[in-house]
Image 1: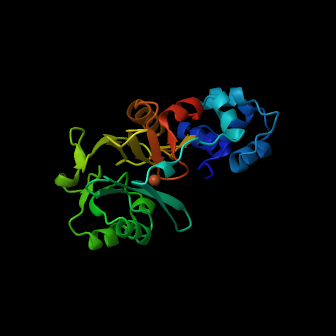
Image 2: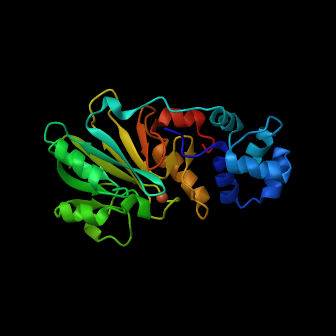
Amino acid sequence: MELEDHVGDIIAKARKGLGINTNQAANAAELNLTNYSRLEEDGDLEPETNLSNLGKLLGLTSNKLSLIASGWRPDVDLLIYENIQQISTNEGMEVHCYLVWDEESLDAALFDTGWRPEPILKIVTKYNLHLKHLFITHTHHDHIAALTPIRKKFPNIELHSSSPNAPERQRNSAQKIIKVGNLNISSRETPGHADDGATYIIDNLKCPTPKMAIVGDAIFAGSMGGAHNHYELAREKVQSEILSLPKETILCPGHGPITTVGEQQLVNPFF
Ligand SMILES: [Fe+2]
């Protein structure tokens, strides 16, 4: 799977987040404005680009930018876990939701809905799952477009979100641990990309990796979700709430490939 963001997208997100104009950025990169704009647009890094200067201006680590530009990809996949499924739907923009279940009880939890309910229902039926919980990472439309049909199909499903508009009983809190069979699910507040951004930690998965985090658009493999209005907050929250997890924790984003905390510490230019 392609990374969600090329190096030009990363640079543009940082520049806009910091309110720096393209002239300033082009000067730092020692590129003319046309070539600089092409870099943001296509991610094609001209050899003469002064990446270290540009990185300094934008608060991005330049050797990590080089790693992304030279084709870094995550070295982890979910295929070894039958009880964790990444479900991708595309309506002009691809988004992932995740279905996770306890193999003994077959109790299941869904994280976001994506655009359409059918691929979710297919897996629920195939494995005879009891879908009991729906956790929302944030209420941007692509992540919750199939909320109504899913609730219609599973009227007793328990909703969890950090939306201030949600009824009190559905709202996440730091102390709450939701049991899904033998799995324990807790939440952390990760606003920035969205005001109601939440990350869910799934614990007690069978080895090799007992811990997994469903991060929504807070962080992507090699990048992060756009956060023009709350850029510093978004970075702080990813650092304190996600990258503080054990290195082997698998990160499941709403867009692009999955990765791990350890990989992101090594390659993500924002951190
Ligand atoms: Fe989003």
